[in-house]
Length: 366
Image (cartoon, rainbow, N blue to C red; front, top):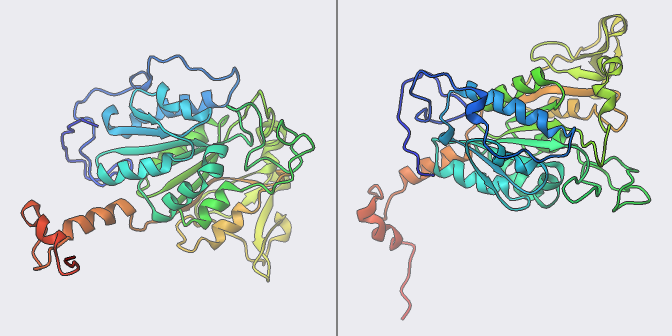
């Protein structure tokens, strides 16, 4: 990265940045075209990645950032072609390691808006360790996990999110694995922002991306994305207009959690044992109705919402599950560097580096 951004006063930082030097200083409004590269987009016809790419390209101008202050890092997989199609900085890295590379970037370059694009195989299999620690540390990055419940690039093996019984080239008798719930995993790793959306809902996808970009800390967004070649129709029950209204649970901060149409609406209530269950709206009177609170520092309620989803897709929560403030890893690292002192208690600068290395915690071997 060799850009030298200029600083302007904005009042509030955008895109989760600690500072605002990367904001576009000229008055020219950026457009989707400015963020679209000259590379041919090479995904299978009908792939859900096209819709996500279009949404991201259309959304990036709203950040008000120069292209050279935005970085997309990807691992390996169909989704990992993403950096090629954006006219920003980018890195197509190695399998599962994108969060680690993004951590280094975010820590060393506070002027950058750092994004990770990954898939259910890349992030949750070989990259599982890197993902959970980036979330746990609360690194200031935005992670987009495309979940199509299959390995697409390697031609249709079952993935860590494939439903039990899924027949693939690597599970001809049906998968016997218990799949990950990516939202539950992210909440368990203490991610400070966790959300879910899907490729075919452009308005919802864009709004979730906006909130993720504004969040300072580790923002994790699971995107349900259809693979028309190896797992077509995996999310059809919540994409079909006739069935999605009864199944989708749209999370709205500060409002009761409901599902279904007005004439058959269900309300989520808390049972005496602490569990949550949907009941007809007429039966909810006098019972403890669950009101969504994304800013609750305790992730227990958000985790309970994430567990409403199962293979039947009877109730599928969509929206922001958690959005809390806590110190970020990269800010804390930079604070430590600034406050480092040598053995005499003086601030460590270039002149005192030798004294710092040879402080009281060393010995001489003769």
